[in-house]
Each structure stands twice: as C-alpha cells, then as structure tokens.
Length: 385
Image (cartoon, rainbow, N blue to C red; front, side):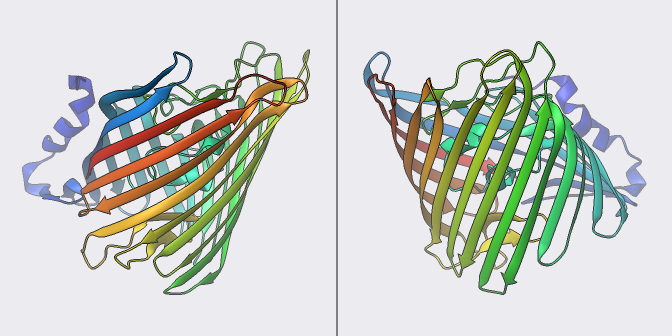
C-alpha cells in the first residue's frame, strides 16, 4: 500500500494557511484546524482482517488470509454553517475515491449535496463500516447500489427524514460492488413515531429507478462474510438492459441496549431483447450492548450508529444476523442463499475497536446442482479517527 503525494495534498494545504489564523488540535476526531469561518478535519480508518474460510470450488477448507480491508484518508470541512465538504481516498482493496462531495444548507434542515456519495436507499448501506456490528454487510445488500455520482436534496426533523436525488455510475465503489448501475432517481423516507431516551421505533422505505445505455452491464455478487473469500453467489453479467426498479422496506426498534433491524429488498431488471429478471433479499439482525449503552440514532438522517459513548466508557456488544438472497427467476437459477452470522464487538474507545464475526453460508439451486456450503471467520482490528 502506497500513499501518494497527490493524496497528501489536502493535508499539506492545511499547513499553508496563514499562521496567525490557525488553531490546530489533535484528538479522537483526528487533526482539526480552525481558521476563522473555515474548519478542516483530517481523519481516516484502518481495518486489518485475519480470516479463515472454505473454498468450495477447489474444494478446500481452512484457507487463511491476513490483509488490509480498508485503509482510507478522509478530509472533511465546513465554511461557517453554510458549506460542508468531504473527500475520502481508499488505498486498499478496490482502490479509489469514496466520498467526494460538497453540500450547502440554504435554510435550516435543508441540505443540497452533490458528488460521489452513498445513495439514499438502504439503512444498511448508510451505516458506517466503522460501527456496523459485522465484518461485512449482508447477502441482501448485494442488490443495493452503495455509492453513486449525482446530487440529492435532504431534509429531516426530530422524528423523520427524507432524501431525493438523481445519480449515475459511481466514481468508485466498495470491494465487490459494481460501479455500473445506470442513471436515475433514488429516494428514501423514514419516520420514528416513537423516540424517547430508551426507545426508538423506526420505519423506512426507499425507491430507485435507473435507465441504462446500450453498452452497460450489471452483476450482483455476494461475499460469504469476507471480501477475501471467493464470492458465494453471483448473478453473472446481465446485459440488454433498459431499466432497473428497486424497492427497500426497513423497520427497526431500539429498546435500551438492544437493537433489532430488518430490511426487505426487491429488484427488477427490465430488458429490451431478453427476459426481465426479478431478484429479492431480506435481512434481520439483533444487537445487544452488554455493557448497557444505547445505540446512537439520527432521526434527521434515519440511521442507527454504534454504542452511545457520551460518558466515554468502552462498550462490548454481541450480535446475530440472518440474511437471504434469491437470484432465481423462472428457469434462470443462480441460487437461493442464506447466511447466519454471529459477532462479538469490543469498542475500546472512540478510535479503537476489535470485532470477530463467524458466518455460515448455504446456497441451493432449485433447478438442480450441488449446494454450496461455506463457513467464514473474521477477526478485525480497527483504528478510526
């Protein structure tokens, strides 16, 4: 892994500001510089994975791997309370830009954002990899887009959020996610009818409609719980595309230290010369913070976070998840998979976290063929600031 001079240019720029206007501090949030109305923050994340997994195609069991899952430099900032921006560069795995966006808030609680960002569609996608309780996202997330290049308008209040945007293919995407997804409208609305100190009830719905150029292709893949293990499911490359329509429904309830989340995703590919394809996925998870903290929740964005650490103590959490992915449509059979995951997460402080996840995967093929079985264990050491 090599960090280039170009990537470090933003950090150098911090030091080029007039000395008399600077106030620089280093804390758990990284390196922050304040110069009048300008505030810049230089942070990053480093996720180191040791994993063990099966390779059913070989066949082989007990393959081990030690690698860098994420190595990211993150520069964010604001000018007064009007303009915000963020630039992330990933140096591991699927290298490239992640968040590259700027936003303005012309009036209170109304944000207009443009650039490369997570599209407002799925709760699971919008949760940061720094706080998710599993090493990787669920099987069902294979059907969601992740990052996209475009613009969105967002608003929200104490009990609700709404986002609507227009997106095209991402500059870059997470490991295992295709950048091609066509261009079109994506939106998400959430409501938290119950939100007290100890209880949150959350509902959300997301919708997406994209169109494609004649040369674009899509491919949906699911890893078995580690991106360093072979994919456990794949739709193969799908062409002759006209339109993609997708829906996401989500519900979550947080009571005290327990958080239960569920999502259901349905996706349809409309094709010009070939048969249409319809796929779906579901996931349900439960997390319990044994040390008693609640999970953070932002109603204005409709997203749950990690343990609430306002008192500064560490946290220990256990979590379990069931997820399912259906890539079967008529005679088209790329399998129906399910994954059972269990995790233990030790949040040592604001910057350090250790996570262990075990996942058991089973894929069967209704039209015949041997089932695929894959077991994966991941131990992650994580630094973020």
